[in-house]
Length: 310
Image (cartoon, rainbow, N blue to C red; front, side, top):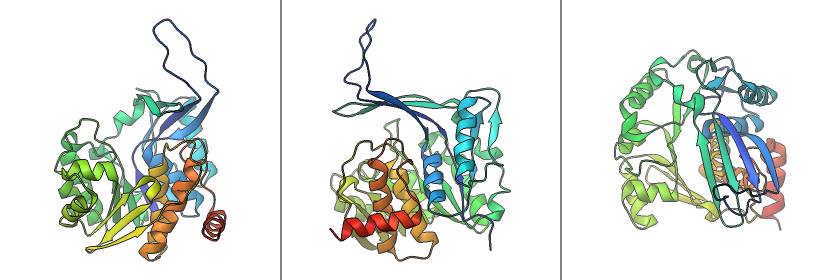
């Protein structure tokens, strides 16, 4: 038996969620929001909190500032049983902050990376990995850190753990094709529909899946309100999403990943992995903050039953 079901490596920051902001102010002007809320943010941190709430044992590797925001994130991790001893505390930068502006039309973000810029894959403390059976990775930045990333994955694979990865959006717009090397190496690869189309240079879902099959034996594509699909050894399984009233989609993909990995690490079939993933994504979007809506496993199962039996 391992001490941790999973170790997570990646970003953690504060999400300042601005609710009901009708428009961005012009220079010299002021606009008023309905409310502002502070939550834990960052894809790796949201995944960690969501999976910990479902009852698995987690440890987190990342960098936080020596400030109140960093302490807030540490407190939230510890409240949900996440081991924080591997988190490094920086005195060079403050903890990152992302301001999420939620209007009636769309979401916009203003982000300060802060200590997330200090995550150094070459100097990563792997003691936690020795105690884990699975590692979840974020923070892939295409050509900018591809070699370091692949080097770290080789080290992790040599330690006998399974690996999952969500690369997220490519802010450079290059959609670096080195991603295929990464897909061939990790055990489970997550992306959303838009990312899949960009990376494969395809215009339709079917063509994109066909191309990804050549590079990965197990990948998952999140389809927003249409649910998600998983392709394992060439066989594709689709699961419909839950119809709920969404108020904040920030972090929904990370919540989905946690639900899917809960099923995977619990030895469930792919249909149940997708079901748990879609349920976590639905619970996430019904609340402000990426992980605040995620319940424990018993409440999640009740949610699934109540929705599917209506």
